[in-house]
Length: 274
Image 1 (cartoon, rainbow, N blue to C red):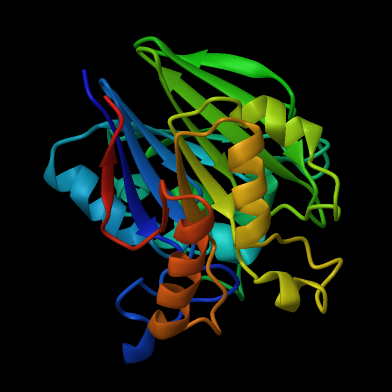
Image 2: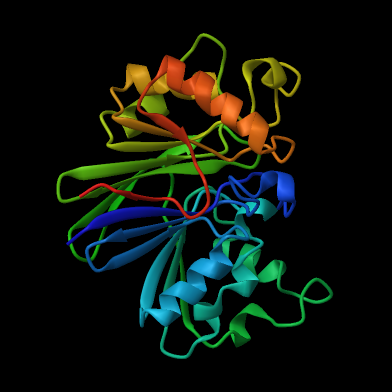
């Protein structure tokens, strides 16, 4: 009946397979959640490939994929997700940022259409279903898991998720741009009192000032939100590809000085919530 969170991809924008980035990892956004018997995947960046191999090795036969949005760094691992090709594996894909046209299945199929990819989505072999839940709605998964959603401020839209299970909670808030000196009420309501907040900390405040409109936030804003919402533990996420391990260690140290229960997410790290 555990509740565990594992980071499989922590980068934003583009994979960074360089020696200088190996300490924190170079794969793009993917977080695996196990809540009792439920396997939940947050985003399908390049990190989802190895997660998929692990699921099959463990005999898992079903999972739910919650997509924050469909920019390439968050879905480009999907065509390489082994369970989706496995007969008998049930994969439910849920998205909330689209207005219905195009729908989520069409978007996911587009990146697998020729000449971009040789294998069409509907020949993958797994039992795939695609569901749209508008941001701001809540829903239940089997086994006592409840999911709340909120709209995020990002070009083309994005959705934040809060997952609750047996009195513990996780919030996944990535690809959102804050407004200076104005905490986002949607986010504050979503993350209030969570045990773990995973937050878009792509830039420093100085870098962000040169990238307004790009749809991302900063580690300092993450700290502000964590304080205001009484978050227990903060995970900095969606690291800029220009931030090598040395840079990330400096950012982590500065963030911990402001909010001690904080860490910069690293690939392979597992956090147990219950």
